[in-house]
Length: 308
Image (cartoon, rainbow, N blue to C red; front, side):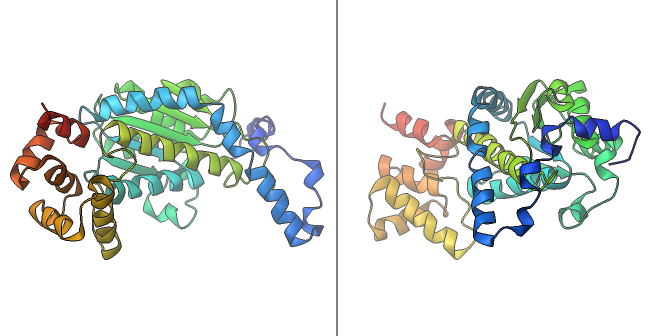
C-alpha cells in the first residue's frame, strides 16, 4: 500500500488489522499450545461465513442467472485474495469442464504476483480497469472483487468499473462498512476479526475467502447442471486418476457393471454425462448428445425428456 497521512488511521479502524494483547507472547508458547490456539481461531471462521449465507446465496443465484446466458465469472483481487481467486478459477475446468475463459482469476500485478509480491499493484484502480478492459466485459458477466480490508484499490476499482459497464458485481470483504461491499451490487462482509498474527489476513480472513469462493463456484455450477446430485458428471478426464473417477461416477449414477460402463464411455467419447444417459435411458451416443444439448447440458432434465 502507498503510504498516505490517513492510511495508518484507516488501518487502525479495521478489525482485520487489530492488535490482540493477549497474544503478545505467543512466541513463548510450546508448539502444541500454539497450534491449539491457532486451530481455535480457525474454528470461528465457519460461523462468520454462516452469518452471511443469505447474502452469499443471493449473489450465487444472480451469478448463475448470468452464466446461464453465457456470461463469465471473474474474480479480482490482490495478494492472498487475488491468489485465492486464481486458484478457484483454475480448478473449475477439471472439476466442471468449464470452457476456457468461462471462469477467470485476475490478480493485481499479473501472473508474477502469484509467487511473489508486485509492489504497488494493489494500489492501482487503473490497473484493474486495464485488466478488465482486456476481457471486454458484457452485462452477462460477473466480477467478484475480493479484499480482506475491503478497501484495496485494485478490487474496489474492478468492481466500480464492471458495474459502470452493466456487469453484475459482488464485493467480498473481511470488514464491516467496507468500500468494496458498498461499491458492489451484492456486498458480502465476512467479519472474522483480528488475526493471530496482527494484520496477517492470509489466516482467518483468507480462510473465509476460500470458503466463500468455494461456495460461489461450486453452487453456481450445481445450478447450471454441472452435477447430477452430488456427482461430478462434467469432470474432465485429463489424467488416469480422473479417468478412473469418471468410471466410478458412471457406476455410482447407474449401478452398471464395468463392461457396460466401458462400452458406454466409448460410445460417449469419454463424456460422463452422455455415458450415464446412454445407460439409464437406453439410447445411443448421438441421441444422448442431442438430448443433453436440448436440455442445456442438464442431465436430470435430459433423463426426464426420455421418460415422457
